[in-house]
Length: 122
Image (tube, rainbow, N blue to C red; front, side, top):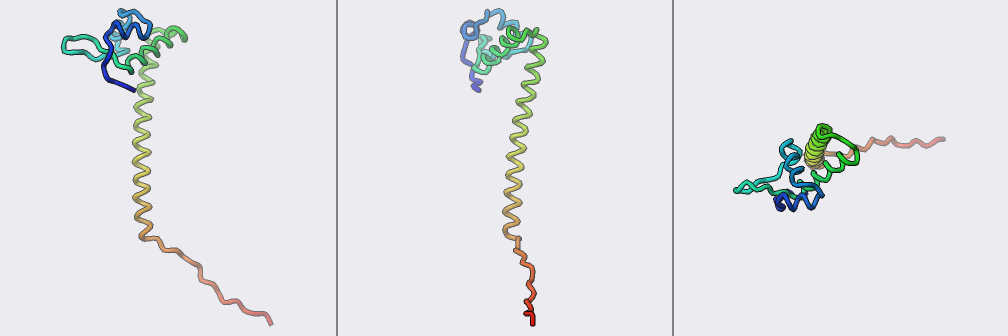
């Protein structure tokens, strides 16, 4: 998701269909964190807008209050962190497996069981 700050608060509010004051309240409660310019102007990124749309769905469609929204957002953030961690662990495990396979290719000897001579019946 794009985290580059692009939209001033009035544009961001229009894009998500909210009042700018609502965005300020969500920022005050820590639900969204727009970046700031050197002149302290809020700039919202595409990922901020997606988060605002999610907040809107949670409050309007599911009827959650802001405390419930905060919990959902925390759980989603935690899930995203755990998914990234799992992906890193899977990459590391694949790399370790490749290293082990490379090692064993040099040391592996095929074993063939000895065969006994076949006796003929008389």
